[in-house]
Amino acid sequence: MEEETKFSSSSSQEKPQELALSLPNNIEKKEKKKPLMTIEGYPIEGLSIAGLETCIIFPSLDLAFDIGRCPQRAVSQNFVFISHAHMDHIGGLPMYVATRGLNRMKPPTIIVPTCIRATVEQLFEVHRQLDGSELRHVLVGLDIGEEIAIRRDLKVKAFRTHHRIRSQGYVVYQVKEKLKQEYRGLSSNEIKSLKSSGVKITDTTSHPEIAFTGDTMSDFILDEGNSDVLKAKILVMECTFVEERVTVEHAREYGHTHLYEEIQEAMSKLEAPLAGRVYTLTEGF
Ligand SMILES: [Zn+2]
Image 1 (spheres, rainbow, N blue to C red):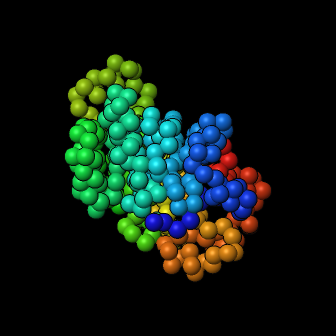
Image 2 (tube, rainbow, N blue to C red):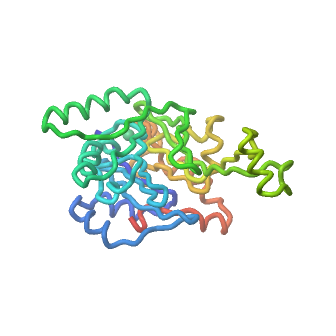
Image 3 (tube, helix red, strand yellow):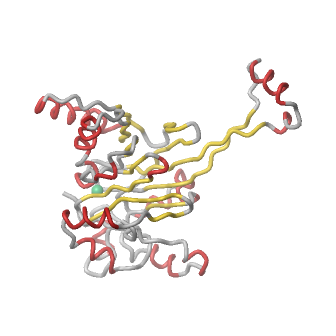
């Protein structure tokens, strides 16, 4: 089982503690009442409770990062990206697929680290044997550095994180096609005929919009291959320990981040406009 898990990107200590003491029944009630939080134009929902469940939902992108115990609001998302196999991040996966099947929804696409793909498929097979259900889904293994397109204008890439077991985070990119400079000024008919003759008339650009780390030590920040993670408009970062009862060393021993690491120091030095952009993801959850 996991250590305490709380998502936080600010130094507020009260709300995570409050959440840590909540029981699942209370959480369900809280979920329905609270409004969506919107950051940089993206509504964000979900929850992350001490060792119980982590599921962060971006409804406008039709995806959830990790599934926790499968909160009701995650069921309507077509895509789920799993960061690692600890129970509080992956436990609700069969329930997610089963609930979608029960509601005759499209089989979802589940993205997992490639190294656990076969085992996750076995997990579904065990449930099929137990109750004879179909559990229809598409299971995709994604390795660090690999990408998957989830919409014409969206792709998601896995990046390296550092936890006690194999783990990875994800960056969502917005993909845009722009007409090449040399073809600007042509009529639409000329562009159409160029396109139909097989000429590539556009340049593809991509911009990191959202990054999600899952459980990790802060070392992922130093990885040169992770520069897009820090460029994203939104970084959802696990910060498991937020107070003095647990030391930074203990947090690192269990593969987590402690707010008292250099992150807290860095955050305390943020200029006012930047500080206003740091949110605790317990608000509105
Ligand atoms: Zn974990």
